[in-house]
Length: 435
Image (cartoon, rainbow, N blue to C red; front, side):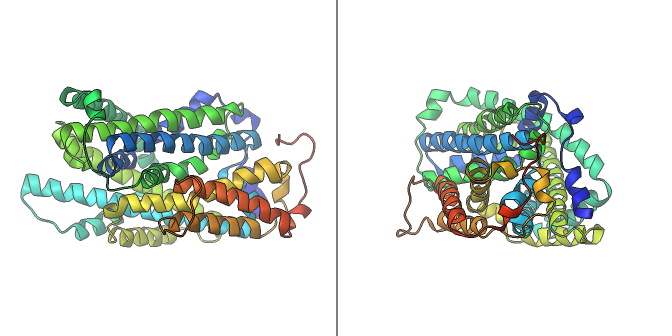
């Protein structure tokens, strides 16, 4: 009964539906974030200008296709991403996916603490001549961020809404100041050496936002028409995210700085740069910790409370000690490898296997575990992670594209070959939201 009640709360009612621009605006604003800026800087630093632009186009198209398809599924079924994962992977299988989501969000927690500590350390050094070890700042910051999530999440949510327009302004300010130092034609002809492959660049761009693309049904399910999913993905990934990453790379070339804080200071933002980085890192980490708790509570409904939040926050602080920010591109490529196959499996399942089962009635007595989904997920992720090894074949030479195609094909084939208990699940009844 408890599980049924939780499920019903995750489904949208007709009176909650809104026009797609409202949904697209929410998703698009998320692209104005510090990690998106940093992704642009890192991709610029690792690729030539031409390769970086190509990686940006390919990555944005892939995200638009993945996010658009997931968004359409959410809009048609009115189901959240968590429920969609349950249909494809089973209840226990969905738990494994949620754990993977939680671990990735903990990694993002560590990235943002690194950003926060470097900004505070630099600020203290520049204005007070104090040298504070970054690990001390990381511990204190982690504890404060956990406390904020536990006691003041509503306030941090309001701050997030206020920070997004600030970051949007900074993006356009970066572009116009950079344009005063370098023309777009000069940028295109700018000569530099690549240290990354095109595939790594695409993987970084996809990895920076792939979780958002997979959980896009969480907001597109509120769209009045299924085309809202396409509009939302297009404006989020093909327009806003593409602009932010391009501007970050262009500003880095024009100013000659590839560190986010140094770039903002060089652009004349002064103390405002520190405020943006510090506030942005704090806000993102409170949201990351909150999302982590939702993933864990969806997997283990009985594990709730402030104690678990504090424990997860502590693990996030330990993740910061790994200096994930120093391995940012590798971290993003790893996220793409892990989560792109999840999208491939859900999309293949909805389009080719059992579209009629993507309704709430199929979850009343859901199966536990889908072997085809789990095997396809594992093999797709393994191919992407191991693709740098010479003997591992590549169809497209783009890791994430190989991963999504392979996982989808393996899933469809295995579903036809292996027994699948979900065939016994009740299918949609006439009149249900399931098209």
